[in-house]
Length: 178
Image (cartoon, rainbow, N blue to C red; front, side):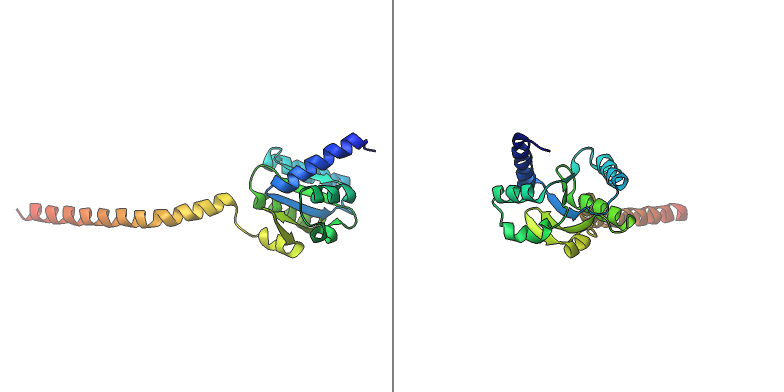
């Protein structure tokens, strides 16, 4: 049982997470064995080095944090039914965190169940969570952009190299004739 001071601290922490975390996912953890929950937490720790957490919180405390974060509580009512666990990433790629959560759920009989969440302050549904988890990671997107920028330069270098090779072949041909 939490003391009143602990509840106040927890609400303040949750408010900060809701306002600042790149992603917050509301889940239903009913039926998730403790061993699976611990396995998921271990995977999160390995991937995000402490920059992601999964926390089971009473719905009343989450509601208070949502109100304190100056968000419309009605937008979250459907997420705050039954047992609620919050998954959030504080450091690292938000989409990678969502991928980790959805992949874990696929491997474990679709548990925990994703109810919805917040991505950069925008609300998303469970269906949208699945679609978002299919997006490339930030690093992959950067690599794609750099690859696109690099392609014209590589082509230009190849054209210049081809011109120099042609010149060398012509000079060699003249040399052999003489």
